[in-house]
Length: 150
Image 1 (cartoon, rainbow, N blue to C red):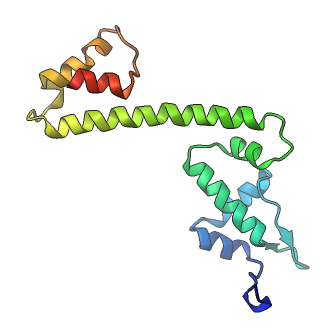
Image 2 (cartoon, one colour; image 1 turned 135 degrees about the horizontal axis):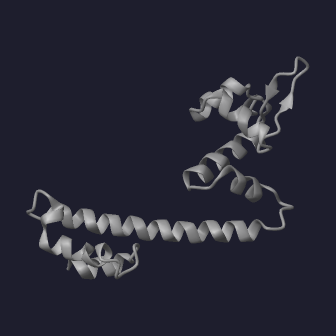
Image 3 (cartoon, rainbow, N blue to C red; image 1 turned 120 degrees about the vertical axis):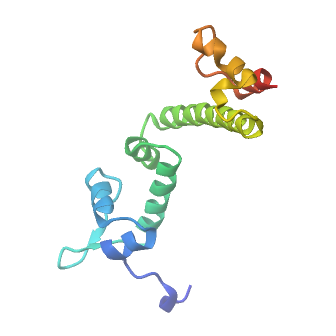
């Protein structure tokens, strides 16, 4: 990389703008220990390429449903419970993916169904009767819902 192509340090406003964030978000992340920007002689925050990547990781992790506490553990190479936190997040992602699949199958059935009020559709109603009566898990798998809807 040529020296003229090197990334210059970003101000808090520049970095926030690059990611479409409010500046207070970056300041909050600094307050909770996720970011530690350098300071110039006047005390202004200066973010280098490492912080740019770190912000991108935080944004992606938040989009994946991680809390700031989970992100902090993930970014802490010395965190003893790092794998435990990440496994718990993977388990949560699996659960949410199953819920999304159920939602998709129910929505697809509702789309194909001729009933304008889906609660009156006999096949759809049958798919929730056991739940209404408390006879099945409130969160059946997508395959179970698919079998109920046919």
